[in-house]
Length: 70
Ligand SMILES: [Zn+2]
Image (cartoon, rainbow, N blue to C red; front, side, top):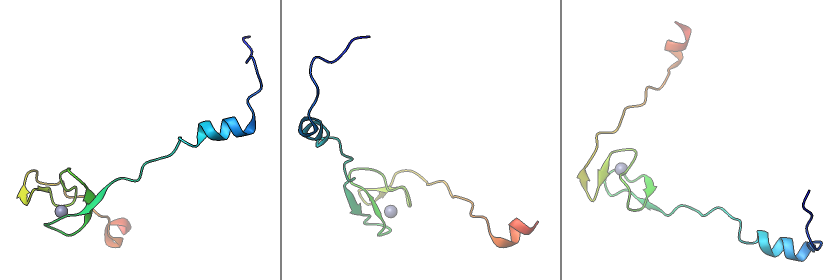
């Protein structure tokens, strides 16, 4: 098995991992429905982009307590 030439010091590994982070998505308020959506993307809640209906969003079926009993 190949071996590393030198032991990586704790500082060196910490410096390397300092760049490993998850970016916070840029969220903006939708001009149509007011919910927070991704900037420069079609609103996932109402399907609007640039104050214009682009896609009709799929209506998610929410289970109610009555349906679960049946
Ligand atoms: Zn919206």
